[in-house]
Amino acid sequence: MQAAMDITAKYCHKEMEEYGSCVASNPSTWHQSCHELKMKVAQCTSSHPVIQKIRQDCSQQFVEFERCLKENQNQPTSCSAHVARFLGCAETVDISGVGKEPAGIGHA
Image (cartoon, rainbow, N blue to C red; front, side):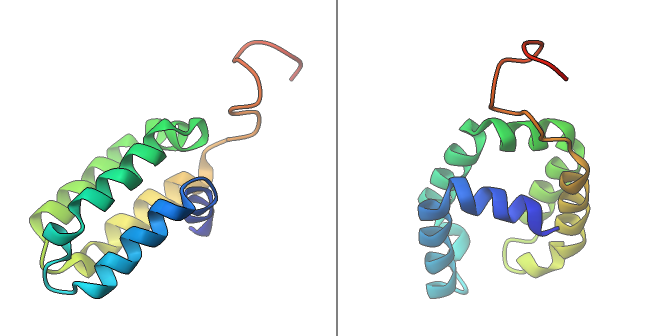
């Protein structure tokens, strides 16, 4: 479960920190107040090859998690089961070699 968060934090640390601070500072309005920072995190994570692979391989779980967040904007903690399913899937993704060299080149 920690792997996906570690990857995001490693490659998008600044964006995650700013978004987290905004959410903590705006407990009742974070979904509106922090939207721009959320988009910066999303932009960062969507451009990194390791995170792209995880989102591709676990797209169904990710879509369900995002849907839950939209439906429960005032109670994001109610989506913890969705987060757990997505992160559980992320743990199973083989990221060895991702981003190191183009697919199909090199040795296995």
